[in-house]
Image (cartoon, rainbow, N blue to C red):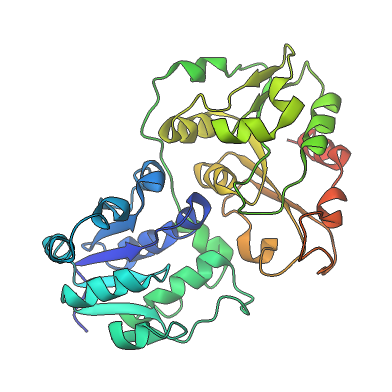
Length: 335
């Protein structure tokens, strides 16, 4: 088989999903070191993708999608890609790749439109799989001969790296060397079951002020949803919602000592940059930690030790509430 020269990785959804797709780029660079990697994503995730040393070029689907079909095809052809991996299946992108004559088009056989647009298909069902999301993403490399890549999460971790691109902004001066700089990211933008503002408030109350400095982080929109937590005034608390660009937030996370969140993008960023990532998860498939835990060397996951479906139809999750702030504090005191 002819070795790939330029590969497009197509993943146009959220930050956490994108971070768990980046090991695909790392695996490509290890096994095909001369191959160039193009990441097709949205502008929202560009700052994260550009921190990955295994990605050579970023293509913004949001901008491409506003072009006429003729201009889209011309743009895709200008990328000179010989392979595309449809990690996040989108019919319009699959059709565009076909019309642009990309020679190797890889997707899952579980999307009907891939039977007409992809010439390499793998039998992959995410919903019923016991594999981690990053391992499922790596499965897309099988048609290229990489059939044993990512068999363990330890191996997957070797393919994931994020290196912040910025290091000169005022917020970094807020981190202090004599205390544990801990980021609270309470909201998840709908990407996971949340621990609850009241639990973050309780944890804030019991954290020793002389040992921890806490940064309340999130978007400006999320700040509105945080209630009183977004207005705590204390010597060891810094309100950060809406104050950082995404590239700055990546660098801020990398410089901090730890981050606590449910299964949302910043948690995955923290793990990838080597910061202590403390994840809060429900024991419910397919959003359980077996599928979505962060990938990194400093990861701790809290999850009720049972299988549970009781709250699938509503957001009131007793299993998430069962994770106590005291148990989080006990773990933090060990770091």
